[in-house]
Image (cartoon, rainbow, N blue to C red; front, side):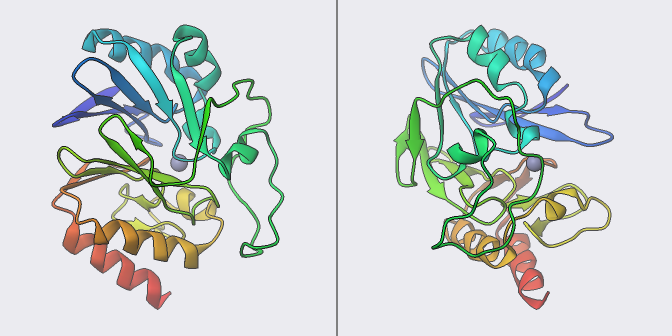
Length: 233
Ligand SMILES: [Zn+2]
């Protein structure tokens, strides 16, 4: 596991060389929030990183319900029974293995690794606009119908799940980067993803943090270029 820090946000990376998967610890004054639960074996490293910060893990937020973002969820809720689990109302269905579409959303198939045996039931369902500690929840559908991003309002870091990828170069979700095509293959709807990417760019983040790839500081110009490229096809 590789650990990188940007201000209040710690990026924990599993398999950094081969297939990098990130989750994040957001440090508050008296507590810690985990964003995403990485792969099934990642819980040991996550527990170790929480213990090193020396503050209680208060919450587990999920950007979306793909297997590489919820893999250690059950192990972590056992290790931290007081942590409150939150996911979008929409992706809470994916978390239960239900990939059916709603009649009012684009009828493109939900893709990617949807877990089938998650036991954990979320404590709170998000719709976007909620304040959770220092974080603001932002609804950013596209990669999945219920994808959520979180903005640390203290320093403008946005933790965007797979709304963008940074491994193999920046790309909006759904835009294939042949050097690392997996997030695009797992994307539900590219048009929705482009709208969400624009919404995130409009927040003018100081740093972009995603599920796959390193932190990107001062990301404005590169986010704009990625959105233009995605619009062209
Ligand atoms: Zn992912």
